[in-house]
Length: 160
Image (cartoon, rainbow, N blue to C red; front, side, top):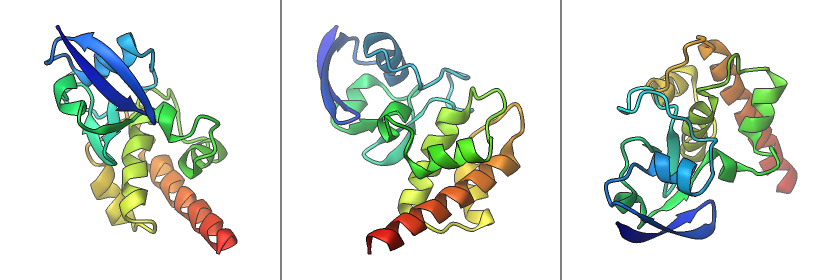
């Protein structure tokens, strides 16, 4: 066992786990942040997507030792009150069906919008290709990302 200090959602957490422990299990079992889901465990479905220093990463494949030097953001850290444009758009357009993959979908979409605030359908398809949805809500996910981009643009205009 080793002690690691993690910066998760803007807060510092000390955990005592084996260095190879997947970040997913530290988040869920040690920090009680259960929004990040276990899907496949081999990095193929992206249900466990979190951000490490703003970049999407698979928490099931990321050892806690690799995350200790990064800022970790989970779905809970995106917006505690549901005010992030993606969260609003997801609700407005009723994007989720079963919802299991949606935290990973939203986290991947958030990384996309952070680097490209006005993505095309192709940009969205490329950025979201690794995220699997067993309910096949891909068209609603794309619409939700476009809607979130519109909301964010309107917020930027209102603040200017």
